[in-house]
Image (cartoon, rainbow, N blue to C red):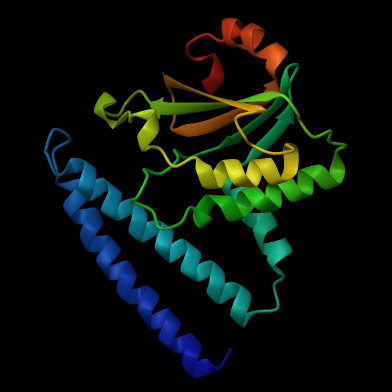
Length: 215
């Protein structure tokens, strides 16, 4: 990357950071019961994610760091966890999925997920699920207002599901795949995704207790 172009991109990030600080100040002084609380919080989150994704691009375009090495560090920073459980597979990432139509892209989380899944499947033998259930567990911080809890049809899951399908499932058509959503209130915001054969789903559902998923 030419120095001139690098300077321009860094300048745009600095300007965006100023706007982020202003938005953060507005958010800080907004009462949680205010009608503008949701829009102000979303403004802060979107600006922060835009800065992060833009900075990723600068690092990859202007340095000798490979995307694979860089995304390995991003995965560590995001604390993305993938593990086998008795019923199937559990995936966890420390953020809630965005609202529909309010994110142009979920690249902030789908890029790290893609590389996390790549690493995991390279190290573990995976048999693609054929008849299965995908369970999205939306975990909300109990210290924040419960009105943050969204309707399931207002949560953007498609792009995340597409990445999961590419690595662990034959396809995500209704013929083979059932989708289940549930919400827990616990110690932190996060999203957990469980993938299992359909016959294991009733047993898994009965075994879940409030708070257990947030440990």
